[in-house]
Length: 478
Ligand code: ADP
Ligand code: ZN
Ligand code: MG
Image 1 (spheres, rainbow, N blue to C red):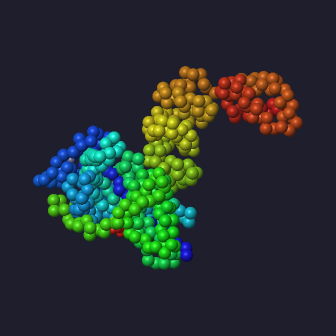
Image 2 (image 1 turned 180 degrees about the vertical axis):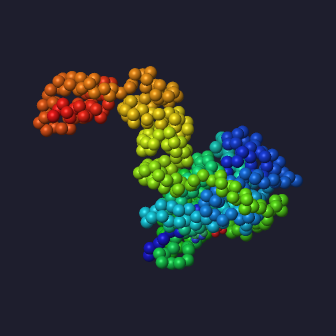
Image 3 (image 1 turned 45 degrees about the vertical axis):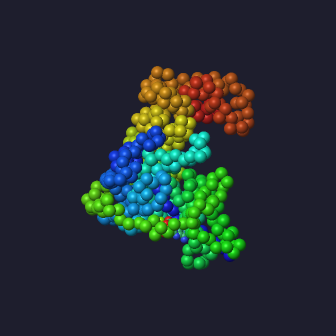
């Protein structure tokens, strides 16, 4: 029997507001434990939550970017469970009436574009963080840090529309990219601002009903999400083939061993005894609010990609690299206002600039070259003032000195020799010094032209205009 996997993802995204969702504590990361706290987020008796308006704005913004229908009325609910990282004994979330419904994300697959449905997006608060004593040299105790308690999250629940771990990965990557463009989260998986739970089941090919699903938690990279799903698919198939049934449960991914481990039997929603939070009024989002949030949305990556290909004539590959982060494409567009050599801008970004970004592990804005300086450098090459090779050798100086490339070229005496008379002298000199190679060239070894160009460049310290050199060589050698 052949099986088909069915996958749905639940993604928690931390919103980058300055303060928490129901109190004014800061959300700054990496503070001393239990310093970003107050009676509200510690769940003291007698306190009342007050909703942070930014959380609504950001979730609506994300919902619009993900093609959702925004609910004009949504309701916060209490999700009750008991755990030391949850001081109130309930998490404020949304249940029956979430703020966004019914969106989608288009992903690229082997068989073309596939649309993955988004069931809902709701707002909720994060819990605290438990730190177990063995990591602190004290195996008999556990510690809790409530700094994260009350940090605003949105949970994005997909439809069970994915049929392979590759599709799940593509969905996650696309989701992350879109959210990065909206700017509502830094979407860093390492920092825990984007966390993903995967629901996986398998069914015999041709069967209409879904199989029993298992939820996998604790995956902290795209690679691990994919590996965990693949492991789980194999495990479920082999259980079924051995005559066992799949039990609905929550499993943990162990990245070291590369396996999933049973954690607990899955709670049903009635286990949480959800009910509307009596301390919070329903959230009402007016049409005007939705319209004004819509106006703040930047162009989404699919649109930007199409634009780069059609309006800027870039190859699809270049366009996809530039779109892969909003900073990159913004930098491209800024530079493109100053020079029309779009392919050169793309080349510089993909070679020298991305090299520095990798070396320094930094963003494009931290590389040390501005769109103005890059366009100047490109123009210097296009006007034949310097060769591309010299431009490349100048690049690190521009970063270091943060000065205009045109000034640096002048100061360093790098202006290209484009004077035909002067160059002809050099070419003649080189050819007479290389009489053997000239002989071989005349006997048919035409690839020696590269050798001559090299010698001439050496003689002129790279400053000879390559186009004129080539013309002169062809003339003099024939
Ligand atoms: P629960 O109430 O157990 O949380 P939901 O219906 O809310 O279940 O679904 C949670 C996630 O699981 C969603 O992303 C959904 O797409 C996915 N899902 C639901 N049923 C299945 C299934 N049979 N196989 C795989 N994923 C599923
Ligand atoms: Zn607080
Ligand atoms: Mg659910």
